[in-house]
Image 1: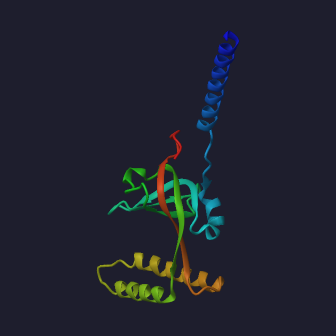
Image 2: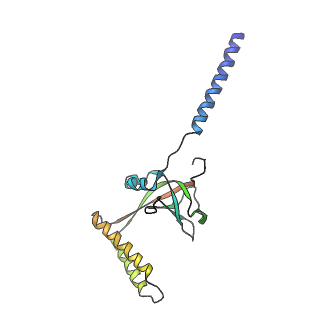
Image 3: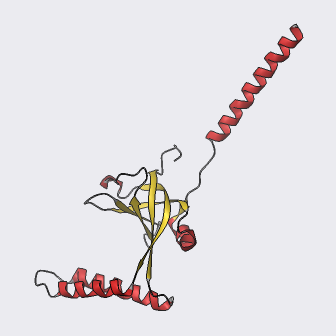
Length: 177
């Protein structure tokens, strides 16, 4: 009987130790986030899929905080993040900080008719005496770049890829999301 009790105690001790190791291994599991530049390479193939991306917040929309933009280290490539899921809004204090985002890749397609309407509005705005014309030139350049992309890629739409953000956290935090 004593032998049975000793085996039972040893079994309980060993199983308790094994459980602790398993929990510790789970806690140290590293979740990887891709850089903005890496995301851009796979974005068209990831529409509708969940991705994890990290970058520097370059802009937070000040009116509602419902969207922000993250950029790569060079500041040349950016991704728009829309607040959804657990994200109610983005605080303006995030500007300039690095964040990790989990989100679903989405696509919006701008049709030529939309670009034509946008161009007409910009031209009407250019005629406004109070407008300095600088923002109009930028918008006209953007429209032309979109048309050039459509022509170069033989598409009848301009594709805008963005993320429906599910959740985010600052990069320097240790907690996994």
